[in-house]
Image (cartoon, rainbow, N blue to C red):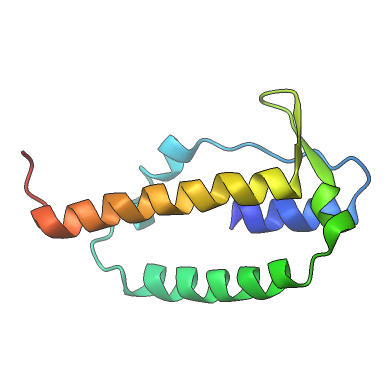
Length: 107
């Protein structure tokens, strides 16, 4: 969700500065610890559907648009962010697949 919002900020604000957040602390909140993944799966399915449709509308100039990441002091183009999130989503998928194979058992 944050990346989707970052794309929209970049495209609607001049020199958009995104807001970092503490992912580790978000993961500790009670709704992140719930074992029922039904709502999470619905949310991510809908989000990815909207995001994919949105990304398909971007042209070459849109992909050059940048946002500023204050934590690193860097400018990130939307094209770079797509590449990062491609890797990032595959990384998360691998974690999910590993968890399903191990069925929650630690090695």
